[in-house]
Length: 490
Image (tube, rainbow, N blue to C red; front, side, top):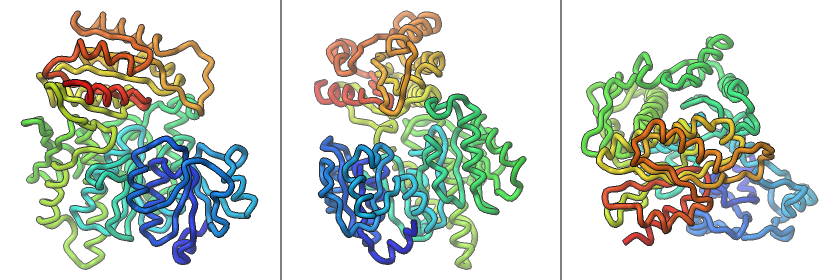
């Protein structure tokens, strides 16, 4: 698909599933490029509704053959839909309009720029968002697409600063990232996940190796030296290619992006990098994992800063003004939607929501909160997502909750894409977690089970007290519980 030609012709595009985070963001990028864009989705309200309406992008809230514009040059669709079951996609085929899956459209779009992919099992969204604000600090002519709404992007998933560089969050699920055309890759982490398409660790590791090997000659791989999986992928790539520039970052990393100091002061995480040893960066988002994400973003931004300004005849590296902008942007960064997102504080209780749904991400987030808020009792609501992930990582899940004081577990949030015939369910995770807490935590640390998340509200109202931190975590819909509690607590 020649997207460059469609852009030059201002061709009409139609999106099936336009409310999806990625689809709505890509629709916005095309809209700003001057293309007439429209689409359709279900009637369920998403945060993207407000963005689409603000932009004036028209969309239907149901699917019907008559919606498809006969003059559309391309129909871009979510992977959740297909021509056999969706009438609009069937109509597009009947009219001879090409169909393109969102991830393939994103890949074709990336080929139009000097593009960087943010990849990894954890940390993609935050790293992409941080890269965006650093691009802005450096005044790089770039576009950014993150996997969630970012407060620093004006509550959107996109940031439009120019037309030369493009950085986007890319997804490993079903090897979707293979459609992307990167000049650079940031690799945050690699471990077992998405067991429905990667049954074992080797399967997902090899997918990341395959993706990194798509880099062109002298392409850059910015990888987390602290993450065993990312380091293993890098070693495997080194045996196959010696023309890829390897840039490690992290507490264990050699070279410029080694984190040489990190401490918490007055609810700020303060850190320094080897290459910026005279500059102290500060973050208001808790956790050493966020420091790692910031180091990755600084490495990518610096790579592009050197490329941009050396090409223009300027001194390589950040100017004093750019670096000061970067310091300010990092300290002001308030995260993105469902990534350690603070809902507010009421009755002395701090309410927070987080998308963490893998044991490593859960534990890292909770440890960061424990360090950041040492005097607060941490009360956690967690809803596991997919039976296969829960079954494969059952012991790891149970251990990951240990930094919390009180844990509420719920039924498993099932996935329509998954077929599971095993016996693991929400109560299985509860039993395992309760045993871990009985063996490793004090008696006042408890684990509860409430099948439907919102049914826990009444019990929580009797438990929460002034000074607590209540956090909902997971890729399910228990965020509704946090919203309900925040609205009802006086």
